[in-house]
Image 1 (cartoon, rainbow, N blue to C red):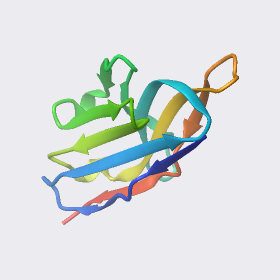
Image 2 (spheres, helix red, strand yellow; image 1 turned 45 degrees about the vertical axis):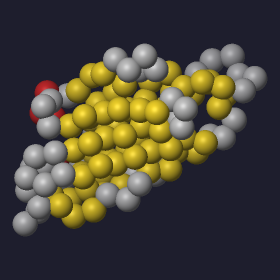
Image 3 (cartoon, helix red, strand yellow; image 1 turned 180 degrees about the horizontal axis):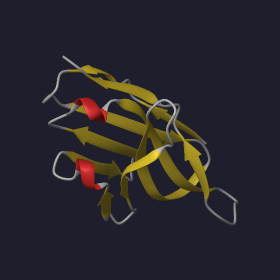
Length: 120
């Protein structure tokens, strides 16, 4: 199973950016998908998650500014980021809990990470 993220980039404060992450491979089903971020030297933190039934969860610092969504048909998760702040600067990683064909339990997979920099 592979998770491929879209490219991040440099955004001015107050700007917007949309990330996507597509899962491919021997996938029977995907339960929760999510986005995490990591600043150099710090732990990887949860940004947002979404279940297969589209229930969402956000860390407090992004509520009202970020929106997570998914396409079950495309095995893709999105993160729409608005009103970006310098403190949102980080490497963003997508995550998917996948049941592979023939497997008995779900496994976690991660994308390669994409840099998002918010700066003027």
